[in-house]
Length: 422
Image 1 (tube, rainbow, N blue to C red):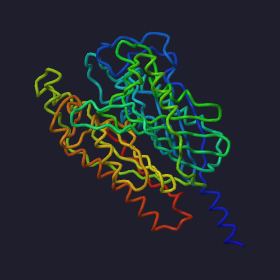
Image 2 (image 1 turned 90 degrees about the vertical axis):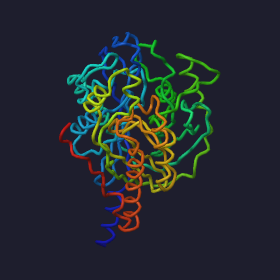
Image 3 (image 1 turned 45 degrees about the vertical axis):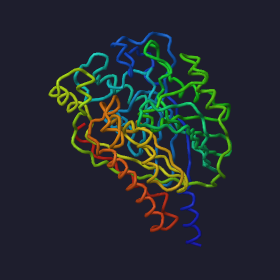
């Protein structure tokens, strides 16, 4: 009788539950927008769309995991740590959609203490306010329901292109759907810059990822996560631009093929973090060249704002589907190399818990160009990121075969890096 009661307790404790929280970002604030230096620090015009933080919060045994999509350009590591401090007891994955029509996220970066024309400097008060907004989205997730099943879909949609001669682009739209038997919770991933709205658009807007999320029918909540899109641009249908292009992109994703994998009943999750063995910070020669500054000044600038810590996280669903979170902006080729290290179906997610810059394969780094100019740790960082993903996935695989099934999902292997020095 005691063993039966213990078994029932473990089954209840390990069941996966989900709740959703949504909170507006920066409500009532007019701030300069990020992503286009051509705006030259101009304050955002009034009348823009509200930006949101969307949180899917999972509970499983003693694990509480907040997966948060924020309509921001990037997530600086210092900002992620600000959010994490506000959410004790939670493991947190904060991912930016990369819209270029959100307040400049350098205002959230405590390393960005110098002022560069067209790029905002750190603002402690703004950073604290946005961190509170993200934390409020997580706290708003209160109505937890047991997850009944999950499923995965990969649709072919011709909506992106590489912008490098040595690059690639995969027209793959990934949807991970979670059901509690009543509602659907959809995680969408596609690799392309949200730059349909150009620098002349000076209002807040989620661009095409925001439009796709807001097309969700009744009974479904959506979250968008951007893929390995460091060298990938959007291609709206029929060459549409501006708001028509945004709507056309969202509509094309909405109409994508919807044949899903077989559902996995009573799923469980597992999470592993692996720190990236970062090389020393050093600017690519093209950083000085493209910005028209001496090499000594380039070294000084990059040494001040480049991040020196970062980790890869692998989140697995019943060891069948995986999201691989990277604190950077990898090219498509690097994203493919990362996913090759992860067992099962997987998708790379950029801009999570930090921004190390653009990250390219070794050959792409050597070829230089715009993306290489914003890669701050040399050509070997690509291999270090791939290695971190491989270590995380192997750790999860080892735990699966070495630990009793009743305990596999309740153990939380997520180990945040030290918060000192930020």
